[in-house]
Image (cartoon, rainbow, N blue to C red; front, side):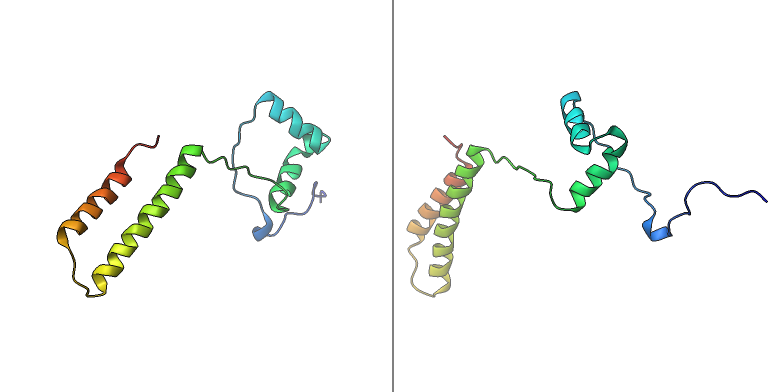
Length: 113
């Protein structure tokens, strides 16, 4: 009887069956390979970085979005004040309410400057 070669198979819950393909530029790849110390250990290095929580994801929010978010918060606050007034049962000036809603609508559709 011949002896089996290689390591014993891992249990089903430890087997890696899912693949994620990621492309790197030459510079990025070389940087990763240097950090991993050798190209054969690259998968283990990347896996360790991801699951150790040591990877830093930098999210860049465009300035126009930051400004729009702030403006939307102010407009939303105004809308909440209108809704609170309407729900209080106090008398409502319909022309003033229409003007405020029109201003609210214009603030939503205006192009940021």
